[in-house]
Image (cartoon, rainbow, N blue to C red; front, side, top):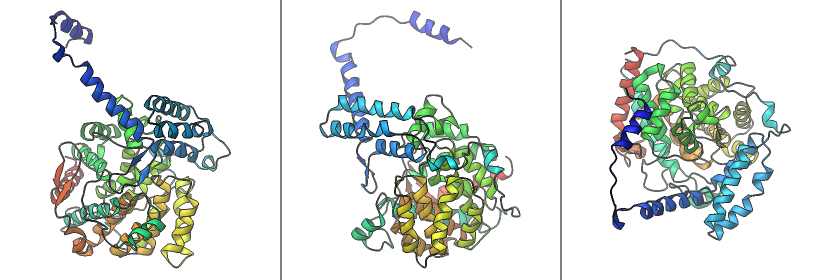
Length: 466
């Protein structure tokens, strides 16, 4: 095999000079396209709207907010916000670009604020630390050859995809404003579609799992990310850039990743539970492996939370029991636990979801609506008061607002697995049919039935150690 220098030397030695005509030179065209893209992306971090719901976003301000949530002093970055908004309003891309870089520089060099309550909790950085901090429930090995397994997986996917479509139209808003606009949401507020970024990362996980089985690594999944996923947002955007630059997990999830405790890992835990039926410890381990690609500490624990919920759905048929046991498998000295414990206590001390949710909405108002915390609280409230009723749970999770599609999709998977297809009214899946549209390379058009079959085959193959 030739050395790198030999290849480049040979290339130059064989290069024959040519004279290009004016029309053959591509400097201006390439520069123009690049400039438009860079300008658009710079503006987008200061002002954008969610594609599915048109909720407003200012992701760079969210980055400052997030670093504050994680116990860092962000005053210097906050001082730049008015300057950035002014430059945006004046369409001064030169100044906006400078201020944007300055904000990130400040965030990359922030100091810990030791007075922040964040530092009172244990920071979980490795799977071993997590595993040693909890006691996992044990069950007999789940029989994946049983007749109803395929239906459970199919129903899980259908429920997840329908719930994602429900939430996509209303994500990014408060309970009050959702109710003012749509009333009491019990069904799709518009014609549903399956185009959603959340499932993107589950498909990448499944691809890696199909190839490597339970021996899959974070790096295996990360490489599927850069191969299959053309773009991301917030934590996933930074992780993709890190991986493409050679920064692999777990560092890809933490390095200069201001959004590492947002919902991006929590929104993809269901697939880890699906491939580890009735084995919450394995579901949690896989969720850790997947989560550290783009998140850290509480962000990863969020993925474990949903993975364990889904794993238990194969061996428990009562949603409150599943919720109780899952909470017990979250480390009590983590800040994440304090969030779900608070939400759970509100449920126990109130007679309806609204009275339980209101204090949660107030307590976590300092967190972005894409952060894991308010969304974890919403899940707890919806599962507690929704009980075993899929429609009621979808109603509550919709009305709680926040990042609705992520929340609804993850917890809906539980109901599909428990009840099978008979537990989901046809009104949910008939408008969607069997088509799944994504922006995943090579998977732009999938059949939900084919996705289900692929999942089952990957689990059975991996279980046999093939």
